[in-house]
Image (cartoon, rainbow, N blue to C red):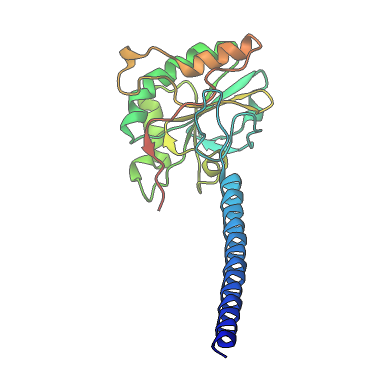
Length: 237
């Protein structure tokens, strides 16, 4: 009788152990499946939010990437006229530069931007400067103050007002100054800084925009085609 009870107890224990293992195995399998789904969602999210890289491995900040076709625009210039890229019939490209009046970095680059335009316009690449700031956030960057600043500095290039801040988000500009070099078809060929020395004009070793245009004119791809823009954040209410 004792032997029979022992067999019953052993059998019961065996069944309970088998059930536990099966349940545990099922739970582990379900957990692994859930974890796999979560990992897939994370990967999909990363892929969706992944940003394109420049040839130097730098990651673009959003908006347009090198190779994209930039949107056209028609904005009011300091001369009171509406200006678009279509007005430049003989242009081979455009140095679209988001800049402003108040930012110290923009001010430091004013003379260099004038020099860049005067040199590159002869090769068919004019500077088109655009003020992206909301004057309610920065009164110094109002249209009237743009007119005054352009006269004070004698800007030889178009200085346009992004009224309503509709253009800069399409381009993905984040700083002033921030350059988008386009070719004649409005294809983006370079994005970033004007040169490698924002604070010291005498310390410039690499003139990125000029280097990019030189590469394009030689039938090559600019290297680098992306650099980090150094400047003030774009102001909005």
